[in-house]
Image (tube, rainbow, N blue to C red; front, side, top):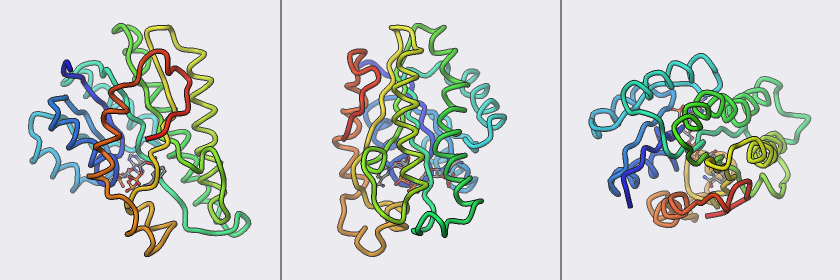
Length: 225
Ligand SMILES: NC(=O)c1ccc[n+]([C@@H]2O[C@H](COP(=O)([O-])OP(=O)(O)OC[C@H]3O[C@@H](n4cnc5c(N)ncnc54)[C@H](OP(=O)(O)O)[C@@H]3O)[C@@H](O)[C@H]2O)c1
């Protein structure tokens, strides 16, 4: 497969970190971002031929600065992976503090919007590409104690289907449910049971071919790893 320029949010740990390593191992060029300065510095040292930046997707100005840097140093991405996300502490909806609810919305919905807003126009001008928005089982079904997270991932599903209608035929967008994988996020909602789930290094063996295999006929689809 030809080398692709792959933009990933949330590369500092979990699924984003595992995808970064796997895409690089397969010869692709990665531009990644996260908020943790230490982790971004470590990634930059480990993979000096790739581009890692500190950026907060909840902040449109931060994403705009990241975009300018990526376009200058890497070029227009072929694939955007909107992976970064957060979850709140398990709680019945009425017990969720308003600032935690806002944080979930700001990152999981508005963050995806900011990345699309900044990177979609240059991708269209460049001849097209693929935008993958990370959803969840909790974007298609629900459980107790995670209502704000469910609301945010149902929104990602709707946003993706509507975006698919906006896009020209050169562009494709999908919502991708990654499955259930042992990360810090899963520990937050599953507790000790999270350790029984698949590790990110195993998960990428199916996830990376799934992402690279997305075609225009998938536009607007709800896919799963
Ligand atoms: N793990 C699962 O089983 C599972 C299941 C369904 C869906 N998902 C989805 O898969 C995605 C990845 O989840 P994960 O399990 O890998 O989570 P994770 O281990 O908690 O990692 C989340 C990543 O997102 C980054 N991030 C959070 N807020 C950010 C912000 N404002 N700006 C930039 N980066 C930000 C974090 O980096 P910094 O803290 O450095 O910013 C980190 O790299 C999420 O969208 C999640 O909802 C995961």
